[in-house]
Image 1 (cartoon, one colour):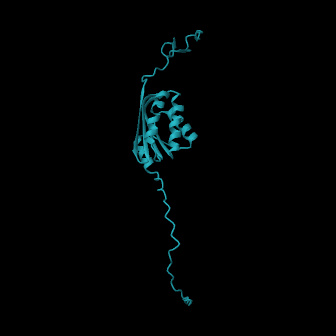
Image 2 (tube, rainbow, N blue to C red):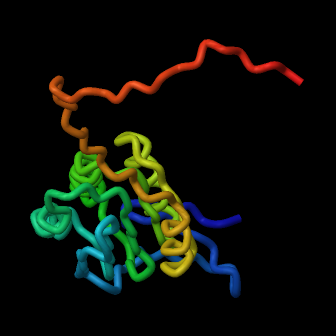
Length: 184
């Protein structure tokens, strides 16, 4: 039986598998403490956001203005969101990122192709997409995401109404025959 130990050190004791002695579980230390964000327009209807490193709320807030500027005035219905190179994110990054999702939806955004292997990021993106009302495509690679978005139909071209015909225009009348043709 293991001796009783106080948890005053902050971490509970765990038995060591090799010799039966007590070991203390250490905290996981973040290896990367900074991140970067790339925001660019891929084509007329697609925007790309690529995040790398450790993503924080202040970092996401810093790039929000650039994201909105890249969205511009034109409708942007498709968003490639590449998170394959993130080391993690702090909880404050999610509410900061929610502003991006709302801005995208306001620009007539419809689909987000989300590329990541990180389960917590997929879960956060699913909640944000559902909350804002965007369709989320989870993909394993950027190439797969680009192919999936290429299969989506383009938005319809705006219909420009033609001018009404003027009332001064006369229609040509053709003579009609009152004679019936026999059916055969």
